[in-house]
Image (cartoon, rainbow, N blue to C red):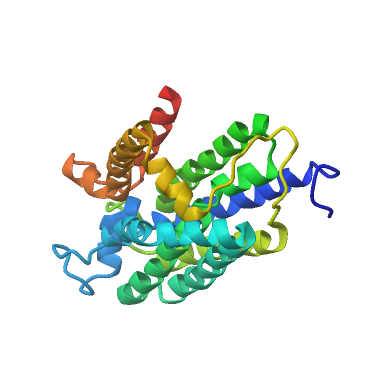
Length: 281
């Protein structure tokens, strides 16, 4: 299908494919967060619950990897194009989601796979600005960016509410702490499908619409330009604090549920928190 203004519908194909892979990478982030206590039983004896390398680490590694890989990922997307950056993220997502499912019984295997998925995340999420700027006219960019942000929350909500339905999350029932293989294979297949769609459908587009007055900077110059603006520095700082709190709470929902006396790892605390917060916004 031809790119450009002659086929404006294709930009929504790009948007849909990007939303799908965003949902998939966010699901992979929190596969174990809402069911940490059943996971400890499932991986019984493979790690020390009081150590740094425990169930919570599977979510925290995403944040660590994002800090390390965010700038290299953004540089690749900006320099070599959306398709190159996203292809790296899509391949990593497909490969490591299958590894994660294949080694579902091995906590070490899951940690290795989760680290690979964490590296994939910035190659996917950091493409939002490039996609909206290069495929959408100025008056539609807010809508496109908003839908891509929504896709992140959809993935998180699925991880919070659907994951406990796929495993034994109620300690009063038989089968408590089982079902992780099935859950990881379901999410793995979703991730592979999302990666394939992205590789097939998402394309570069370097041309801009005539109504855009964008000024193009080289990556380094653009980054220094942002940091030279006081308001942008303040915005970045506030964003880091807010996002850090949100990520920390999202990563430890089941641990929080345990602290407040909730026995069933059903993910409702995380789901209600996210839906309630979205409604307030």
